[in-house]
Image (tube, rainbow, N blue to C red; front, side, top):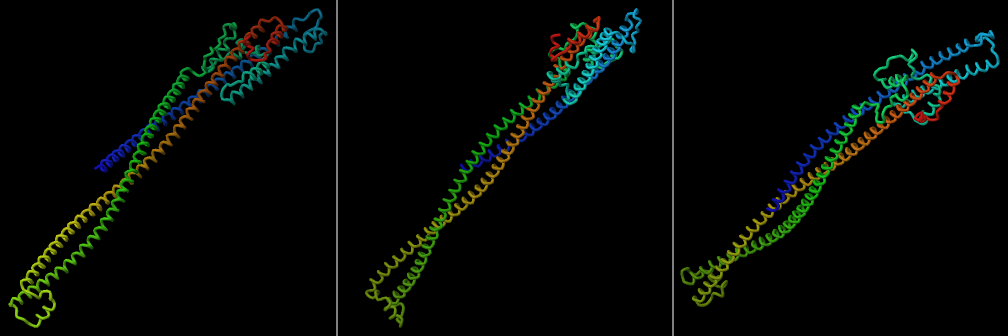
Length: 499
């Protein structure tokens, strides 16, 4: 009964383990589905980020093109203004000397030096500055196309831009020339706002706040929401994976405990089978010995029975002969010779014969009872042997069933271990993917911050150029213009904050 109860409990444990394995498999399928959703969301987020970066690069290139066109138009306007100034100087020469201001005329030494200084310095400075502006624009274009973003190095790029843009204040963002009067698209509204501020005072020029982002706020919030959603999904998957690991560990412990119990029961059954086999062998030996003894006793009893029957027949014949019922013949002498102990008085012989007959009958009854007892013992031994054989067969069947169940348990445990390893690998992949997403988010944030810093530097530079342009417009002579241009030299783009 205890063995049957243990078998039922083990069977129920195996059924519970099967149900738990099925439930774990269903949960694993759900986790894999969530992982696929997370991957799809990550791909969508990545595509959105790439689109935002491309949009920002496009805007930066358009702003750079608009700045280049504005500088080119302003340089043309400055050239025209310089020509008009030279013409006015030529027309304002002394009429008494009778000398006309013509390119082929030969002025005096002082006038030649003055004209040389007045004609050489602004044009040469403008030519050098125009080449510097074009070089800076080309370098900015190459950097924006190579990096994918408008990612200027503040130190190197600012120094180059400051060295080469001394006279850019004369050619930047002027609305007085026809070449700059153009329409800007919605994507160029930042550049348009900078250009349209050319006629304003420096204090009224718009500076973006520190928290301003090139990427739209809605798109930025959407990206943050997607990152938070991915983090929440990953944390939920981690919790689910931890729970599955706990269940797996509990199931492994239960399987180990069941395996130990089954091993103990198998060892117990094996010892019982071995003891039963030894008892069966002993019983078989005892049975064979008892059977041989019974057969020997039966042979002796049969032989004694034949002897008693023969003696009884002979004594009856002799008794009848002695009484005279049987006539004497030649055989009587032989019988008398065979039984010399019967010679004597007839009464004593009859008494002795009766006693021998009674003894023989008692011996026969005793041997008969012994044979019956031996037959009963033999039957009980046969029954015991059959019972032991049936128990042995039952134990062998239970042992085979236990071995099959143990092999099934081992297979289930191996499958669970493989699934646990797969879960660990997927968890590592999830963590790596999350780290990559975080790295991409930080990189995008750094690029956005860099673009904001570059945009603010451009705004400050445009303010400085507007101030210098206004000073040049208000200048009354070329010397003042030269002084203003000499004051425009910068060692770093951060120096624009002081202006």
